[in-house]
Length: 252
Length: 89
Image (cartoon, rainbow over all chains, first blue to last red; front, side):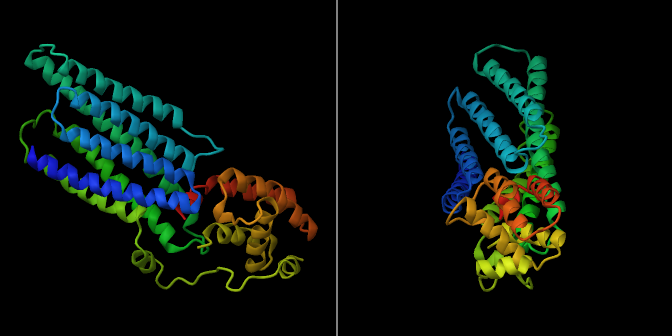
């Protein structure tokens, strides 16, 4: 339990750092979408704090909060990539909510004191863990595809700075980690329940570390890292501002 | 710094065959016409869409650019496809 608390604490701190950075950016640059992502990381930290507690309703509370984070994340993806165009948002949202509700119902069965025999418990756990894994894969795959398609569309433009393209690449990478984690969660449990150092568990831990590091780099991109990504890039910025007359003359 | 301006300026330059610097400037002016004191980087997706549909069209008409309707339609399509740039940059 103590190891778990230390592990979750590190993640809570990192998520709060990311949330703070996103909040400041959203206020400074007037970007409402970043405010949605800020909410996502704040609520995710709350869910981890809940996991640190060990009460009867921990699992239920955690599942409810995770349901909220899923809705917030899907809203972010929809508003960032799909305003004014065809979007699978409703289908993905409904599917994600159904998966989380299945998870919630099974959590309620566990905490409701209902006695289930081992065979039924095994099946319920398999369904619960598959729901969790599929939920993670669903959101991550949508974000992965959206970022990948955007990067493809922007990659040939010399006007877009390399650090911006780098941010898309980092988003693609951390969503691949998420997809793999989803697959491993389904694979790992319940067949290897109780075996804390099983290969899938270790892989999930390693992937989680990669994921959070990449997320941090993507959303709290330090200036030095930005400069590194921009090395060798010559900006097409207006070096000296043109007057309105000069601009209009240039357009004639 | 000016990724949004430069991205759409680059496109406008390609379709109008005018200098990129002038096209970047025209996009900035079109935004200022609609939202005084703000840059393309400081407005929202729907606001930029509105700019491309109104003041940019007016500016292009003022300099007798051919196919203004088509350019406006295409630059809006480009914005819709690449709207994430406004969040990521």
